[in-house]
Amino acid sequence: MPYFPQLSTGNLAQYPVVRRRRMRSVVNESPGGGRLAWADANAESTEWELALRGLTAAEWGAIESLFESRGGRLNSFVFLDPVDNLLGWSEELSADIWTADPMLAIEAGRADPVGTQRGSRLVNTGQAAQRLTQALAAPAWFQYCLSAQVRSESRSPVRLVLRSAQSESSSVFEAGADWRPVWFAAKPGSTAEAVACGVELAPGASVEVFGLQLEAQGGPGAYSSTPAQGGVYPACRFGDDVLRCTAEGADQYAVTVRITSCREGV
Image 1 (cartoon, rainbow, N blue to C red):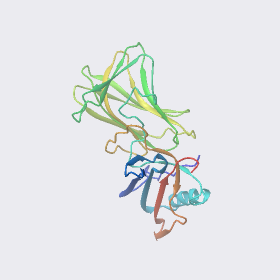
Image 2 (tube, rainbow, N blue to C red):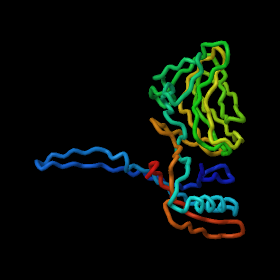
Image 3 (spheres, rainbow, N blue to C red):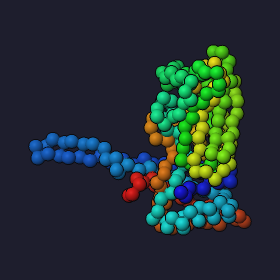
Image 4 (cartoon, helix red, strand yellow):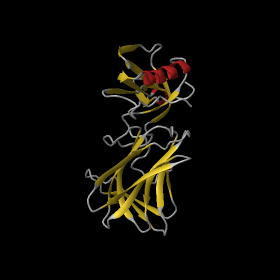
């Protein structure tokens, strides 16, 4: 599946980024004046406007190549939202989208660092390391940043893990009595079109976790809660029939790219 390319900086966009969410309501009005309205899920879409400046010839060439291979607006590609959390159900760690090792207990509704009860407590009840991970249909050759906030009353180590079918990267942090933001960035480094990420606890460890977030960039951004779908959009199209690129100098190009999400088969 083709993907919108990552820049040489490890990012997918440059600020400012414009994102719009479009929704439509269907209204049925009866002859007696009664009105019934409901959301039209088939009409919902998300649009991005990426103003890219200072692109190298290679970066502009990758975008142009994708545009031509997709026939402009005709065919779809995968886009990773540069201003959202790629993980789905980021605060529902017992949801089916998450995979927990058998000896890992999950308790929701714990106090979190923002003063609500959206944190989760993870307890390794086994004699070996246990993991909680989520798999995504995303390119393993991209750079990603995995971040979270952690705390533990018993000062426990927490390992953040990012892996593909061929390789794995991880980093270990110590969780103490106070909430601590932790993150690491890595490239899984394979040609696989799937990545997985999550946390690993040592035997007997008990850690509270909040704000698990994966982004396709080199450092962590502000946390974005995802109640359902994460920021991986499997069916997007270019929003224009022509990409107008401006050469601003030697190996310096500028272009504005518009992207629209769509439903499969539409």
